[in-house]
Structures are given as structure tokens and as C-alpha cells.
Amino acid sequence: MTEARSKPLSLQELALLNQEIAALVRAGVPLESGLAMAGASGRGAQEVLMLRLAQRLREGHSFAEALHTEGGELPRMYRAVVEAGARTGRLPEALESLATFAQQTLQLRRRIDLALMYPTLVLLMAGVLFAWLVAFWVPRLSDAFFWMQVPETDWVRRLVWLQQHLWSWAWIIPAAVFVLGGWWWFSTRGRYGLKGTTETTTWSAFRVLPGIRSIVSNFRRANFCDLLAMLLDHQVPLPDAAMLAAEAAGDRSLRRVALRISDGVRAGHSLADCLAVGRDLPPFVSWMLICGERQGTLISTLRQVAEVLRQRAASDSDWLRIMLPTLLVVGVGGTAVLTYALAVFVPMSQLLRALGEFSP
Image (cartoon, rainbow, N blue to C red; front, side, top):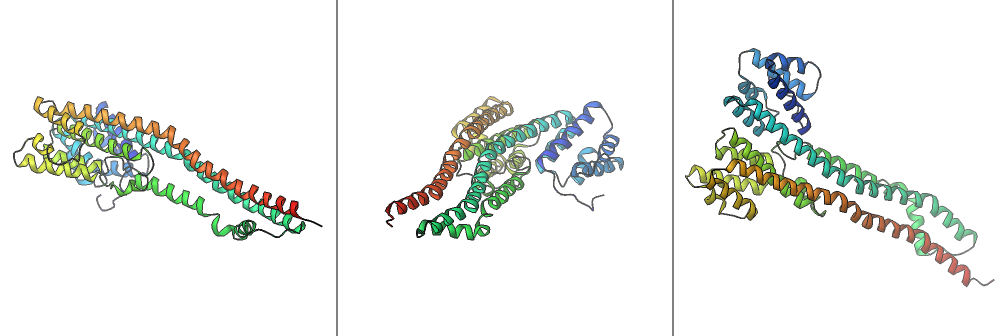
């Protein structure tokens, strides 16, 4: 059963898998039969994984053992939470917490996608309309200069060159939109958390856009705090929990924080001592975590910090969805209008000026 590995699950597939397993656990259905029936209903990656897990359970393995053996497509953090929940007898709570987290992650991803969709369509339409203008307007303009026996200006000759070489450049904007859109979709597919493979370079091309840097930073920090609370709540040791949460959050600065926490706690230092070194976390987050540790409420404090950071990310994404299209309409649309004006009114004014200066 372990020979044929399917591709890694996307975040949406992981959310669906988690929801189905949680439903089986809540209903009290034996997992081996429930997973087998659910896996037989389709041929997707999650169905294949369900069948493999069901086979392992039939062989007498526990769910945690089956997940550890057959869950290679699942993020390490997901396996750690579920295995910890199964060991402590809190599997339903573990699955519910994972389902909530995955749902929040998908919602923010949709916010960002919607914020980028409208400006992309504006850019695409501007490129298509300019190509149409060059293809149908420039030949008529050139004919007007010819029939009125007016010498073509340098500007008109440039437009004629664009018209003659239309297919050598008209495809660039649509192709760029398609390639960048596809790259954005596949590079961020499932990578807003739980995958543990996101690097800063995935977002670097988009960080020049206003608001993107703040959204990504706040969301990754929220993920880190939320995942760390989830792991600690299911009795995963703090050094291991910090490294798993940072790996799933996918941020280099958070990995540095997690490494300091892991090494410091193993060396006998407090969380406050670990966070006092470096500036990878905002002062507010560090202060809240230090207070939470001192008061013995670290788990609840982590969840409160995660909620605050996630609200900030959601607020920034709302701002991005409203303001970014406006800014890009002014930029892209204004550039398009200027280009159309230069392509139409400049040669027309040159033609009229030449006719006005013409003396029979």
C-alpha cells in the first residue's frame, strides 16, 4: 500500500480530508470502515490516502501509527497534532482545531486572490484594446496620410511599425498575465499554512504591491501562534512544537525564533530569555507571549495574539481589495488612456497641422 504515493495534498484537499475524518469520529463510526467507504467514492488524492489509512487500520495499527506510516503527503504539523490528539484521547478536539485553522487559511487566501483579480483583468483588457487599436486604427491613419499626400511623421511611422509587427508583441501582456497568474496559483496553492514549504521568495515579486507585505507577515505570525497553541494544547513539548509551527508557517524569521526557543528551552532557559534575543517578532507579540508564560496562560495568550494578527491581516486584505484596484486603475487605466491619446490624437493633430500648412 505504501509503494504508490500520490502527490502532496493541497490545503483545500487537506481541509476536506480533515472534515471527513472529523465527521466519522463525531459519529462514532469505526474509522477503518468509514475511511474505506469514503475513499471508494472518488479517485482524488484524499480518497487514495483514505484507502491506505483504512488498510493500515485493518492490519491492526492505531490511527496515529497509520497516519505516521501512510501520511507522507500530509504536513508534519498536521500529523503531529492528530497523533498527539489520538495519544491523549482528544482526537475530535484536535481535528476540530485543524478544521477551524484550515478554514480561516482558505478564507484569507480567497481575499488576497479577489484583491488581485480585478487589477489583472484591467491590465489584460488594456493590452487587448491597445492591440485592437493598432490593428484597426493605424492602417486607416496611414491611408489618410497617403491619400491626402501628407508625409508620414516619425510618430506615425512608429505606429505603422507596431501594426506591421503586431503578432511579435501583442501576445506579451496576455501571456505575462497567464504565466504570472498560473505561477501565483500553483506557488501559493496550499502554501498559506500547514504545508511547511513556503519561502519568502514565493511572495517577493508581489511585495512591491501596497499592503501585501503586511498581510503576509501578520498572517504568518498568526499561523505560527495558532499552530503553537494547538500543538501545546495537545501536549507536544514546546521545543518540538515551536519548530513544527515555524516550519508550517513558512517564514525564515519565525524559524529563527523557533530555533532560539527550542535550543533555549532545552538548555533550561525561560521563554522570556529566548524572546529577549533578536527582533524577529514584533514587540507586542513578544510581550504578550512573555506575559502568558509568566501567568501560566501561554496557550490562551497565543490564541489571542493569533486572533489579533489574523484580524490585522484580514483588515489589510480588505483595504487591499478596495484600494489596490483603485490604484491600479489609476496607474494602468491612466497609462492606457495616455497611450490611446498618443496613438490617436497626436497623429491626427499632426495630420491637421500638415493640412493647414498645405498651400496648393
